[in-house]
Length: 167
Image (cartoon, rainbow, N blue to C red):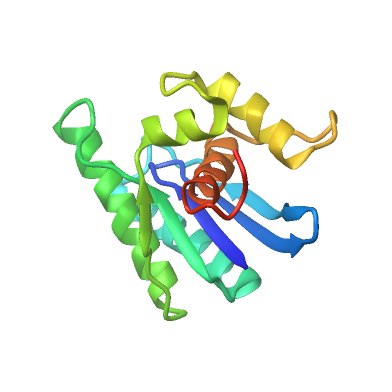
């Protein structure tokens, strides 16, 4: 099973996870993780184009996907943040759509935190710590941003929620 998990923002994170069923249980492997940082100095159209390009590249390089899951989002801190997140959301949908994909699953941020860390109010450092444990990442493995570890957390939370991996 291959999962694409996405932490959507104007600096989105993408994680590709493989799940193999073994006699001892499911084994989750990190295939790829990446993120893109956009700048408020650029017009939204450029930011969204950059995000779309990354989504297209991930779909091209790492498909086929069995599941695509993103963090659920309804509104931001203010009107502007809501607009930019939904703009990024649309850009990702366009990039994935070029390869016939669409997001099929969503999971709330508090549910991700609860399932991955045991604490629905965990901070980003705690999520990263638990992502490292779940995947047995080496100490020298670094994330470019917390958007990357959050994307992995979204994928892990989905797998836990669906009973694919044990909590």
